[in-house]
Every structure is written in C-alpha cells, then in structure tokens.
Amino acid sequence: MARAAATPRKSGARKAVGKPPLDAVSRRDHIVTSAAALFADKGVATATVRDIGDAAGILSGSLYYHFSSKEAIVEEIVRRYLEELVGAYQAVLADTRDPRARLEGLIRASFTAIEQHPHACEIYQNDYKYLESLQGLADLQPLTAKVQAAWTDTIRQGVKAGAFRKDVDAKLFYRFARDAIWFTVRWYRPGRGDDVDTLTKACTTILLDGFGTT
Image 1 (cartoon, rainbow, N blue to C red):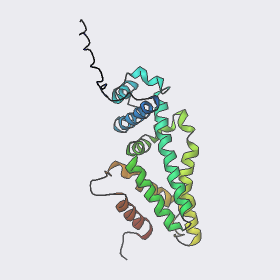
Image 2 (image 1 turned 60 degrees about the vertical axis):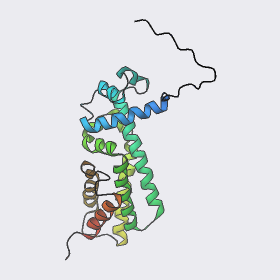
Image 3 (image 1 turned 180 degrees about the horizontal axis):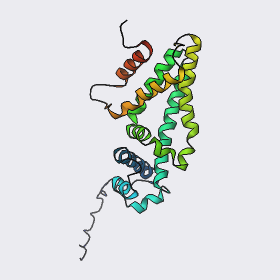
Image 4 (image 1 turned 135 degrees about the vertical axis):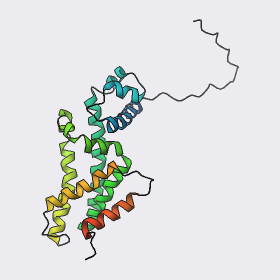
C-alpha cells in the first residue's frame, strides 16, 4: 500500500503532543503492575509469559529485556510488597513501646498494605506453597522473617509486661491474628463500606478484648 504524501508543516506550528513512550523503569513498573493483577486472577502457576505480555500490552518476547523469567517477575512483585511492609512495621515499632499500641499499629499497617497492594497480598496468600518452590523467593526469607518477628516480639513483650494474657500460647495467638488479617484480602474492597480505620478498630477489639459481653 502506497504511503500518503506527508503534509508540509506550517512554519511556527507546534508539534503534536502525544503520550510519551515509557522509559525502561516505567516499562518495568508497568509489567510488574500488570503481572500482579494477572497472577492474582489466574494464579502464578497458571499464567504464562504470553499472558503477561498480553496483560502488559507488549510482545511476550520483549519481557525478557526487563526480566529473565516469569519467576523473576513474581519475585519482584513479592519483594516490593514485603520491603514496604517491613518498612511500615519498623515505623510502628519505632513510634511506641506500648505493646497494645504496637499491636494496633501492626494491624493498621497490615490492612493498609492490603488496601494499597491487594494483588501482591492475594498472590502471597493464595500461591504461598508455589512461591516456596521458587529459588529466587528463598532470597526473600530475611524479609519474611522480619515480618514475623515484628509480630512475635510484640506479642511476647506484651505477655511479659502483663498487657496480654499468659494462658494463651503466644505463637497460636500470632497464627490466629495473622490469618484473620491477611485473608481479608479475599473480601475487603476499599470504598464498599469498610475502610482501614474500621477494620483496624474491629480487629484490635476482637483480638484483644474479645467479642463476648461477659
């Protein structure tokens, strides 16, 4: 097909401004965001490189310019999520030494993470067993250890200080609290009635004060 002749540009006319092309960093972020939504919807094991390319709007082969494999994309998603979560937890622990205030702060930071990174949270909860099998994810163990330590240290300190009960195993309490909070990613939808403040208050009250009136 013959190309149409170019229309001469008038002197002084402004060049049309279109959407600027993504640079390498922005393209990488776009791939991570698109892949996170895809993995949360289809599951990490089921999604293919071609699926990721389609979701990101680029050729699947172009993905290898930014990432060495699908697993590397998963690792990037989880790493970003855990690094931000660890940072939020460390800020809570640095802000107060009161066990109850710390626990409430950890709960709030967790719900905030769910609100801000729902896809990464869902991936981590739904595909944890698969993630454990990935070599690259083993390198993230220091981050997961810091996440768990923030909770267990706070709980044990609270028990020692008399702020929390001694007749309930601290490790069991942590496991109940962990699952109660993180599995809300399956039903919590911001803007549909609940918010971080509501969830934090309810969760803190139930975990520390109970639901019964007697």
